[in-house]
Amino acid sequence: MNAPAEPLAPHGLPSGHSAARAGWQAELRLRFEHRGGRSVLAERAHLGPLVVQRPLYPEGDAVCHVILVHPPAGIAGGDRLDLSLDLGPHAHVLLTTPGAGKWYRSAGAHGRFRQRLRLADGAVCEFLPQESIVHDAALGELETEVALAGSAVFVGAEMICLGRTGAGERFARGELALRTRITRDGQPLWFERGVLGGGSALLEAAPGLQGQPVSATLLVAAPGCDTGLLEAWRAITPAGGSGAVTLLPGLLVARWLGPACEPGRAWLTQLWAAARPAVAGRAMQRPRIWST
Image (cartoon, rainbow, N blue to C red):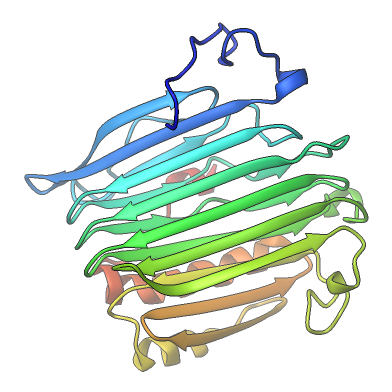
């Protein structure tokens, strides 16, 4: 943290604050280490309503599964959430969420979710939150920075659903600003920045979202990314929507557009299943929470 934490009030906010006036202020810092063949949650510190449940080991000791929980269930105007993950050498962590995240409509203040991941040499982080649903008139900023060292591996998924499509809602007002940066040993692998504006021409344009409310990205940053893995990905076609893959130096990228989350989620899961043995040395293990 940049400053000492203020005393916590019973509702989890610094004393003297209110959710209605200042929004939720939350910070979660996690450090994982590899000890005697087991990946363990070695340190945990949090302020406000952003926590992880008890670590799980459905694959045995080598891989620690953690579920990130934000009890308010969504991000509203004025909220500030900060997540920091620090993986020591050879630690292997799979992080997901119990359900879809939400960006709620705002009267004018922006909400922000900032994610910082640092992976030491030999560490593996599979960062696989479930989709984010952006309500009409939401104002949000989602920022992700990943710093890799040596042979560290990062697998990251991001799915955005603009509007509550099941209720017929479109994203006609508001905006969501997105920023993702991945480096290895200080050198850039991936940098992307954009703004999705409610009702903007970009949402309908052919170079943009082509009128589709759901977009998804899967990034695999690993020394094992090669043309063989690219061809394996190209052989997997989505059952719905449209998808494409590409190979950059040290990075595989998959993009998907479609009318609903389910076919995109299924396609990204297939790609992850194809990549995991090559980059992490293990067969895919679907998180149990995804089946509840």
